[in-house]
Length: 172
Image 1 (cartoon, rainbow, N blue to C red):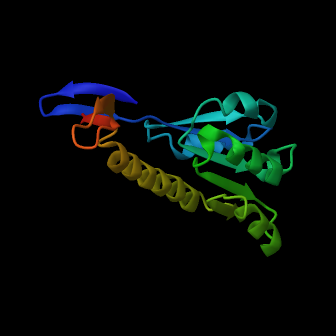
Image 2 (cartoon, one colour):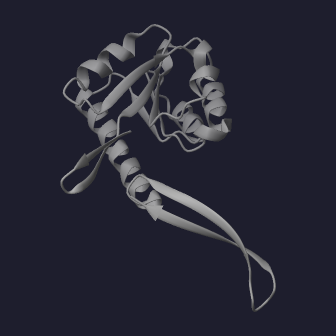
């Protein structure tokens, strides 16, 4: 996220880091080309053996190309969901395995979208854009315009004589 001062006040520009998980780099090229005119998106290639390191960060979105990984996609989704920092990070699976049973098994793992191959590039583009728009709206309204300072103070209540913790929030 970048913060710049303007005449109207603060201008917040969020760089959306999106992890593309595949082991052969076939997907990252497609995403970078699709979003070449959208500088607010940064696509980062992640190999399945790097997932532990990658999950130390919190991307805006994770896209997994099931056909290009050397690991069970269900196991990978469980690992992402068990990671404390990424329990709510949206996940999209792109796959040629399109049986209804397979898709439902993946969706049971709290995956937000399953996109069947062959992929319609416009559908993929707008799915990513719209999901990020929803996430940004959520962040904006849950944190008060992207940034807030929190100050906690413990005081003694004069009425009940109990210690109370007050949380004061300043929003920019």
